[in-house]
Length: 250
Length: 322
Image 1 (cartoon, rainbow over the protein chains, first blue to last red):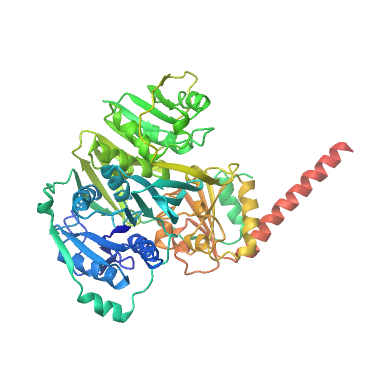
Image 2 (tube, rainbow over the protein chains, first blue to last red):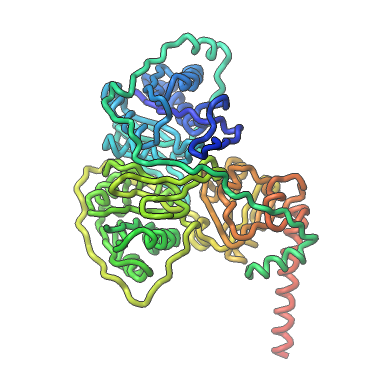
């Protein structure tokens, strides 16, 4: 069995994002980037399965320009068997990414896809579902537990609004990783050094014969209004007054 | 033009979040059709049919849909002649809308905060720090709506018509084996009027006491990621960028430090109260009202107020009897 893990290069979660003066984009040049944390969780879960022997190979794939190689190398250092990049001059929307991946997967087949439930830049939470729809595969989103069964099926516990739900999906399946699916390993220094020399296969988006025209236009980026708070109340009595004025009653 | 709203329900009642989506739909186009999917839906469909703003209810009621898998639901919804498909931006809607969009070959839009014009939306990114406009060129709009950004629709006396639809054929790709649902007595976290949230500053042994207090006020219980990760409260309580987004009238944070990822999930609350002894906690700069005190002492004093209140009631009753 082969697991494919699509990963995305995003601004590192410790860095705050800034808007370009023309308000048409986020400043990315010279900003520290890393693997989207949810994709890292997905990769860890796939690697665990490979290490336990059920999965033959874990391949990672990312869409983007040459800078994207750095996250593919991080994934190789964590233990991914193969790294692939679909070349695009800028990171496309989840919709285009899913279309590109679908076409790419026709030439690079796999049995299961595990990816992060959302990217921490656009917070879209769409790629896994889109990909499952394009491929016509079963889907198990927001997974907190995954166990592969012998009979071409996978049991997934999903984090849903009111609790948890466990479903069994026929393979091939698309799974999206929630926070608690796995704890990503740290790559060792020798593994990081070794990963620098490993090959990254590059496919140009044009080879996939897809027009890279977006169907949505995103603009007028602005900082969300910041709340002005911090008014101190002296004691519980004063707090109770506030609560009463807010209409809160036991 | 036909707007479809996917209705979320628990097998007994429609979820309040869907009422907010119906309000958002009324800012799109007319007519608005509620789509209800499941098994044995008569009472839910009747409840939905009273929602203000709707023109009809379409029901797919079939034993195969008792577990309404994303694969089957998407196939049915994509087969309908709709120009807009809306659902709430929670686990329910986020699971379905992008798959429906893929089948219709359109680019979905997630977490809409306001609708400026047809196909023109505002949404948030980067954990709610940044807002942006999105204009879609697609003929069909597949959108998830942030429920708290729109009002809940009212119920009318007059019901709209309910139409039955036949199920679509699709081999079984997934099935549900078990389900763990939170206490159905407490209000839905995403749409509760009051939320009490427990952060890492609350000693674990106090959690049951805050739960009791929350119950008293009919408040939903929230938690920070650290508290859920520590296994102290279940995942469905998590408020934040990757958990639930809430915007209650009153948000009471008990010992919550206020990491940006947490603030992203509650910043639109009408009033925020922070109870935290740490003067430097970001939440204490963010909340409207701050009680800079130890959680234990505040909780004890709060409970004591109830105790004395109850005593008073009892003694009044006694006097009356005498």
